[in-house]
Structures are given as structure tokens and as C-alpha cells.
Image 1 (spheres, helix red, strand yellow):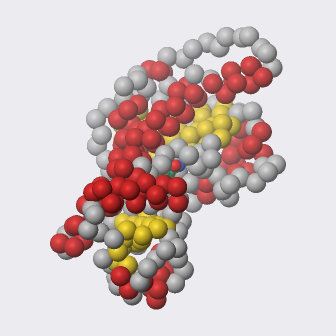
Image 2: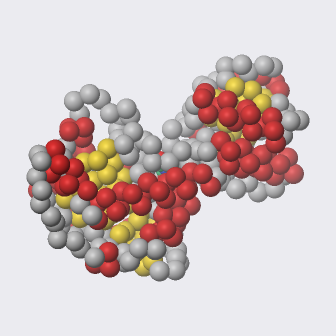
Length: 308
Ligand code: NDP
């Protein structure tokens, strides 16, 4: 019963160490050292190998090493093999830090001050109290909820929008496409934490920007293809949007010379908002493997028909 890891190799060495400590009886291998392919029962991958079904005849389960699965070509993972995404606390903790940083940066005009500093300009900006800055989160899954929980410690009025209805203490929740305009009209800072699916691709578009309060700002930590670039740049130019923090782009890495690199009202990070933490991820994977062997339900199991 071998576990094969095929993702970031530096972190892979940490995975190997934690597996050796916590499950010395479970053989753990780092790609491309696959050993006997017939022994591979569990695969942990960012992008799985193309010929997965024929190479590993006894594969029982595939883990995405990240919280999202849009990078997977699910058609290459046979339908009878469950696909499980990472529901480990390290991803949520690091995402909470990042979104808190981004929301506070936009709330407190950090982009403006960065530009002023470059120009050696000493000019104060009137401070808007948090209780007058409404923060709206799109996608109320594991990450959206964790982010809102932390943002509650500030005084921001909080809103959330989701496919299915949610009840979250201290958050005004909206559900479904028909409720989106009402939600957007109140979101001074909009945070996208949606999965990338056929329904959500291009959701951050001209129509959406036009529905936000004028001068709203955006944090995109979902996926690059959620954003329609031309609409976004036009919204920044027209003042419909006042600024944005982007952690994800399309493509990644962002090519040299792309307008996002030098735009004065965009703060850009290299898909680094959160990261799977080997220490806690190994515990999650071992727990899922134990449940799989007992024939139990699997936390984080991807619903392939929904795409997340
Ligand atoms: P979850 O699956 O836990 O949550 C996704 C939420 O989005 C669910 O609540 C779901 O609703 C909602 N949703 C899905 N489709 C729609 C839709 N069409 N309209 C409205 N709501 C919708 O995912 P996570 O919270 O774990 O992760 C969210 C995303 O964050 C990932 O898919 C990934 O793209 C991104 N991410 C980015 C990272 C980064 O470093 N930048 C790191 C990790 C994740 P419902 O409850 O009805 O299913």
C-alpha cells in the first residue's frame, strides 16, 4: 500500500519525514521514484501523471495537494477512484492571514501610500472607520468561512454570497444568482474565494464591477480565470474600482510586460496566499486513508459533477 507524492519536491521531503514519523508502516515515495507501480494505492499530486489509470492498476484514491482541483483533468482519473482535496488547517490559517492583510491594506489605502512613498509625497488620507467599510466574501466554503470568522474581530459589516444558503453568525448571507446584485451593491471590499468551475469562470466581469459601490476594491484569491482582465482594467481606469489585491492570474506565472505588474492600483503576489502545510496535511491524508480502508465517507471528496 504505497503512497506516492508528486508535487513540490522541497515540501515533499517534509512529507516523507512526517510519514516516516507518524506512519512508519506506510511506504511513502517521492515522484519519479515510483517503485512497483502495482503497489501504488494512494497518489498525492498537484497535477497527476497523464496515464494514471494504466500506470497504477491498483490506485484507490487521488489527493489534490491543494484546496482546489481545477488544475486536475478529472477525465484522466477513472470515475471509480475518489478525488479528495486538501481540507487541512494550514491552508485555511495562511489564507486567513493573507485575506486579512489584503482587506486591511485596501481599507487603509496602503496602495496609495506605496505610490506616495515612491514619489516622496507626505500627505495624509482621511481614515474611514471599519464599521463603515462593508466586506463581502464570495464563496462560503472552508476558506470563505474561516476568513469571515477572523474579519469579525474588526468592526467591518460582513456579507457573504454562496451557491447554497448559509447561516454564519455576524454575517449577512446571500445565496444564488438572483441574490448576487443585492450582495454586490453592499460590498465595498469584495473577496473572491470561489472554486473555478464552468459557472464561476469570468464571474469578475464588467457587469459585476458595475454593480459594486463606486470605488469598491477587489481581493482575488480564487483563481485567475475568475477575472475578465479587460473588464477589470477598464473598471480601474473608470474609477468603478479603486484598487485590487491579486494573488492569482491567468496565466501563471504572469508574463513579463503584463499590465498588472506595474499598475499603480494593483498589489500582486505570486499565487502565494496560502500553502498546504506538510505537518498538518500528512495528518489529514493519513486520516482519509484510514477512512478509505474502512469504507467510510471521505472528507474533502470532490463532487465531479459540480467540479469542486
Ligand atoms: P470549498 O469547496 O470549501 O468552498 C467553495 C464554496 O464556493 C462553497 O461554499 C460553494 O457553495 C461555493 N460555490 C461554488 N460554486 C458557486 C457558485 N457558482 N456560486 C456561488 N457559490 C459557489 O472551497 P475552499 O473554500 O476550500 O476553496 C475555495 C477556492 O479557493 C478554491 O477552489 C481555490 O480556487 C481557491 N484557493 C486559492 C488559494 C490561493 O493560494 N490563492 C489556496 C487555496 C484555495 P456550496 O456550499 O453550495 O457548495
